[in-house]
Structure formats: C-alpha cells, structure tokens
Length: 360
Ligand code: ATP
Ligand code: MG
Figure 1 (cartoon, rainbow, N blue to C red):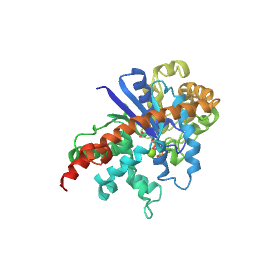
Figure 2: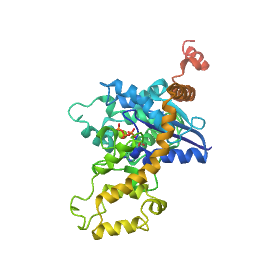
Figure 3: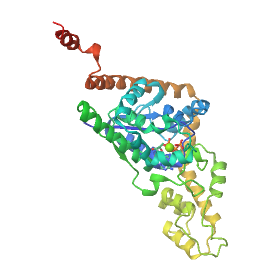
Figure 4: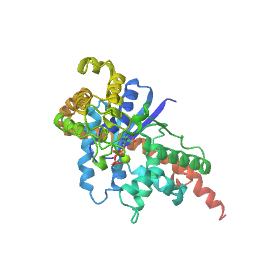
C-alpha cells in the first residue's frame, strides 16, 4: 500500500514563514513526487474553536485566508483533497469513542498543550475542549488511515498520542488503525522557526510572524525590526551569529545564487557570518540582503495568491468538493469502527437472531 498523507492548519490567521518551512514546503514536495495514494489537507476550524470559541468570526474569516495560502504556495486541488474539519461529522463521532481510551492525566502531560495553556492564560480556567484537542487530532489522522503527517516539531507529542490511541483501539477492538508517523523538515531550524522577536516559535497567535501574504513594504518593516545581537551596537563591534534571528533566517532561506545576485562581495553565508563575527559589518546591510532573499521566495507566492483572490467562489468550490470526498472516506471508516466495536446494531443481521435464541 502506498502512503496516505494528512496535514492541517488552524484557521486562526493567515499562514506564515514558520508554516512554510515547517510543513507547507514538505507538502508541496510530496505532492509533486506523487508517491502516495491520497493526500488530505484539512482546515482545522473545530480545533481552532477550542481556544477561540468566543470569537467564531475570526475562524470564519480565516478559513478562506488559509485556503488562499495553500493555493498560493502551489498546492494543487487536482492532487490534494482539501477539506473543512467541522463539516465532516464522522470526526466528532470518532473523537467521542477515542476519549474513552485516554486518561485525564495523560492529556495533562502533553508538553505542547502544557505550554499552550500557559500562553493562553488557561491555567485557572481551562476549557475541556482545549485539553482534549489532541484526541480530536488523533481522529483527524486515523479516520483517513493516514500514515504520514508532515508537521513542525510542536506536533510530535500529538502524533505520539495518536499512535497510543490507535494501539489501544486495535488492542481492545481488533486491528482497525495504522500508526501514523510525523515527517519533520530535514533542517532542524525549520522544525520550529522562531518569531521575528527572537523569542518563542513564530505563531499566528503571538504576533511575531511574517505572513506569506504580507506585502513588500510589510516584509521590509518586519525584517528591519528583527531581533539581532543586542551587544552589537556599533558597526565595528564583533557580533554574535548564534541566536541572531537575521542569520537564522538566512540559514533557512538563502541559497548560493542569492550571493552572486544580491551580495557578490561575499562568497557564501559562511563568509558573511565570519565578517559579522569579526566586526565591521552592520545589521542593516545583512537585513537588506535578507529582504531580497525573502522576496525571491515570497514574490511568486504573492502573485499566485492575487489570482485566486479574484475568484473566491472557485476557492470555496474547491473546499466544498474536497470536503464531500473526505466525508465519503470518513463515513466508510466509521462504519468499520462501529463494526469493530460491535455497535453496528442495525447492520448486523445475526444480532437479533442470536439475541432471540436466549428467549427460546
Ligand atoms: P496557532 O498559534 O493558532 O496555534 P500556529 O502558528 O501554531 O497557530 P498551526 O495551525 O497550529 O499554526 O500549525 C500548523 C502547522 O504548522 C503544524 O504542522 C505546525 O507544526 C507547523 N508550524 C507552525 N508554526 C511553526 C513554526 N514556527 N515552525 C515550524 N513549523 C511550524
Ligand atoms: Mg499551533
């Protein structure tokens, strides 16, 4: 059997460079290699509601933004099934059964959820739906028999939980689910891109992101405000490259040809770093180079987005058709699940007969 690939994103904002290097790029590569049975990409609106339940307008608005971002990076509806989580009710059904296989203490141990609870000030008043979202995420993956999940590093604990749930279900009710695995980007830094403030990971919810749809002026402004080495005050001062976000971004995005084209006085990134370390190289020059490097990547994405922005009806149609396909696959898997659990009462012809035996 070939692979079934599934990923998703929460429609809590437009997608950013962290998503791009952490997951979207891998998805496009996999799509173009075509070495899979099915590839699903889900807009996780129900999951987004678990910490945005009081602001459904935000989710509604960003659904289309995320879809536009997908199309703009080159994901192709001919090759990929895009769908909307809330419209596949089989996901909710499966989540409910899975909840029996997970303990409260196991949920509380998930390190990603733990840090998200802190970030969202949920410590004193934690919505139950938020705590259990990894279980619903396990359902997202397992309902479609996905074995490959291309994600950033923060999702590894979710995959671990999904595998545990699959194992536990198979053990109790019989072999029904495959155990999925996370596929992380090769470059370590791309697995958790830091935000422009140099702090935590770049995240829609933290306001430290460069968005794929940002215009040229905004990208420039954001790069110019980027965190560098706070001790590098005068140009002559020796500077630190480690932890300097401008260099982190260059590590991820710059290619040898960028030097030839935009900064020919340096042979490569190592030469630029050496100069910065020695002193005599100003932040502004490095930042201006980074802007050009980013523009090289972002400009084609922006152009493609602009085309789709003119025809939102078409974008909605893509989501609607994909969702119908996903629902069909989900329905047949839930039937299999119910059969395994022995709760397929009306499809099981032998059931009434065997129960009737008791009363003869
Ligand atoms: P939110 O703040 O709403 O949680 P987010 O920015 O974390 O948003 P998600 O929709 O939760 O984005 O994540 C979608 C995918 O992108 C996941 O696979 C996640 O691992 C990946 N991802 C998100 N942020 C980064 C990042 N900074 N670096 C690498 N991958 C990332
Ligand atoms: Mg997230």
